[in-house]
Length: 193
Image (cartoon, rainbow, N blue to C red; front, side, top):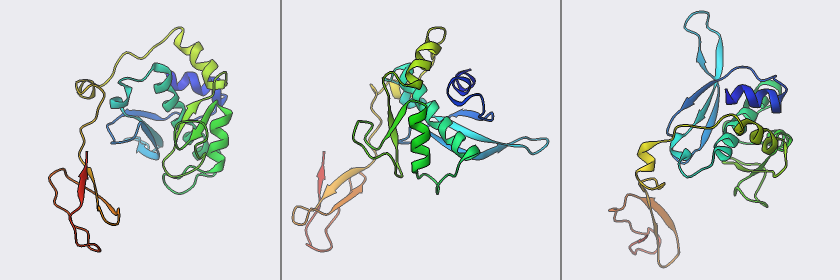
């Protein structure tokens, strides 16, 4: 329902249908994959738009829907533009994002880089998405969020810890109980909490 609404409101109804999935991919609110699914009979292919339900917790419906539209912009670029190598967000994609009212930003804030490997965005106040989303939310809302994530008060379980050499400041990441040494300074790395 939301995909079709935003397709009509922001993309002139031109985006092809895509399969929307909910998957927990660490450190990702969503991702796009071209031709990730095919029909069991006929072999037609479609894109996958993934939303991570763990990131629904402590985010507003507007913020969650902005992730959907971010991924729809990837569908637009895949269908009508020239995508970059996997995971890279190029200038064409950034321009498409701005057109739909989402400002690409590596920091999720004003002043962040508009292009790069790991990108997010922020909502342009009074922009196309902001207006369309308010219209959508007058009659609809999101009903579900992840229980697993919610039980940890919005915090994911930390699986890697940062270790730093006290001499040269070289960093490494490992499990909490790791014992690491600096190959250059020959001293133990200290875990940062």
